[in-house]
Image (cartoon, rainbow, N blue to C red; front, side, top):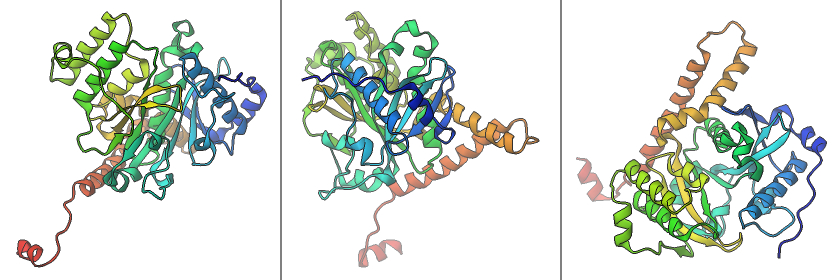
Length: 364
């Protein structure tokens, strides 16, 4: 049963918590600002985000049914909130919440105590090798009025702005290599289009290492011969065109959030799809994306605002510094991240040491 939403939080209370130390950076497009906070240092912002999340998800026929969307991960599990603030309209456009691997807790059964764990079971290899280097994302939203073209550039760049925020956070944590989260498709979405999207994801991005599996899996309900006729190309980008054309012929479009994710990286891993019984029975697909393996133009686009803001801070402190500072900052941060990524991959691919006489003989 859907309960009435709480009233909007006072704008004065919200603005009072948008303090300079919470500012992450300006957005690359749309003239908006990104902030990071948690429920402890910004309780009123958190309450308004909870209201807006529930409002947005209800608008898409999902949601929790509570007066606002705010769970234990918002206040007990060190999850932080990223929001896009429209400084012209003085309004929250959208947001994400996230937690970094080093802040994740492990339960008694060896599974991580994170949002994704209620739908996916993670392998021992994932928990040991990948989890410390993961940034888990959840509760992504863009409020309904900014999903309309009537909102102009603010709506056009809403998702792009959110990714500017994720790029800025990950650039500050060189040991974080992966974004992990869930893509949602609502029950009202065209079932044939939904099955085609699931088939495309499974064909090109399937996690063949079984790092995680859905506990209540849903598989595409389509004749494989039909899928083969539509998704007929081995090339990822060519087959994306086939998918997009087929979905549009059904009178709909690939959902914006899913479209954004599937065009970020050629090495995205898909863990499968399941029904989220706790959230309006939406179909959630688990994914993981390596930041260093994103398409270069995408990666550079979403760190641009962070680099620009970093360079401006340095210039304020050292006015006579080099004019090409943004280029220098980019190269420095890229080099540090590349070094960390190389170390991570070497460790990930290292063969286990063999002990005993046989190992010694092999070393001779």
